[in-house]
Image 1 (cartoon, helix red, strand yellow):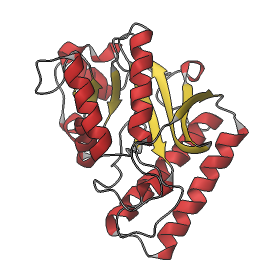
Image 2: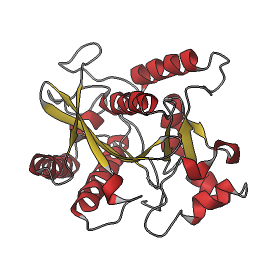
Image 3: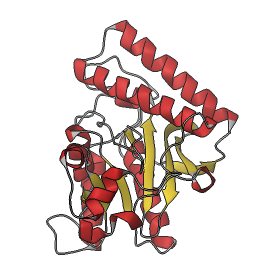
Image 4: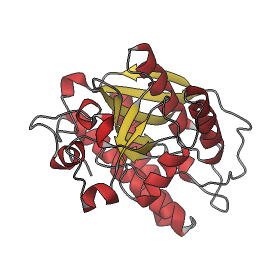
Length: 263
């Protein structure tokens, strides 16, 4: 993504789904009519929640971000927008709970990692305590998708690594809670970010050359590396623990991430 957006509320509202939800994951074709229909439905629901005036200011921000990201996913998959890499390499993965779509991510394989291009959660998963309750809401679909991609990264020889670009300081905080760290030149950024039709973005090239600027500080490129868990010498095990804590504290991270400047 060119960026990742903020998370679901840190506190859990009263919801019918108790405890840790169990998700199923599925790769779907970019032109899947069911996915397009679901994204359109998400937009209608988000607009209805925003128009109703009953959600908190913080929830409004999340809903607005979610609408923007879901709309971008639709444009990228329809070919109306380039996205962050080669369309032929893009995969769409969805998370479902009891058959209902709860989150969707587009991603691209890179030499050293899987790059998270765009990630969005269903609007009912963005509601906070005090907002009108929604029986469809399920906690944890965003982190569950990231964990799924990390496992895929490991089984395909990429060491469990995931990369993305955080869109703002709020997004950076969310991803740090999930175990991501700011990417360094020594992390080989060009091996973790797709090049796109016109090559790598100026932003990631500056990082690779060790000369990050204001844009990279505002919207940092980030890496989840099981061998480099922040603040832990335990490597892989510490990273898993970090992800478990994050899944409890921060459930949804509607995000967008792209090697070009998706946002």
